[in-house]
Length: 193
Ligand SMILES: [Fe+2]
Ligand SMILES: [Fe+2]
Image (tube, helix red, strand yellow):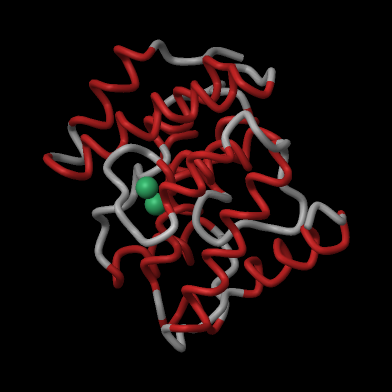
């Protein structure tokens, strides 16, 4: 297994994203590294996963649907209606083919950074939270969420972030992806809230 260096990953992602999206990737990388350090996770893996998490973020909806089908990625009714959600899964495959041998832990964190999943690792949770609380984020409640870092456990921090996501989806009357429901049920079953 080989993990790309930060410079290698930055060169690759800079060819795919620009401007705000690139700045968001770098901020997510830095924040993921801080979260990893705080909770004793692999900081290098967190940083690279954070940097590469939006690999397919600028692919269009039709392209994402086509790529997902050709890669054998399951496409739910929600993905069909909101193809943007597939950028995580398609991006994970893209990163894997661009960096053969990249650790599975990094690929999994990229795959689960948007809709989550029923079995999320500590690194998955760190990257999910980093994507939400990086310094460029300004939504209501983000300050309170940032303040939980290092004060509560990673599971509690993730549960707090996910609760905000769920509230946002419901308040906006948005569709909820089956994997998001699985993630929420796992949080509740784990008793982290
Ligand atoms: Fe994303
Ligand atoms: Fe992101």
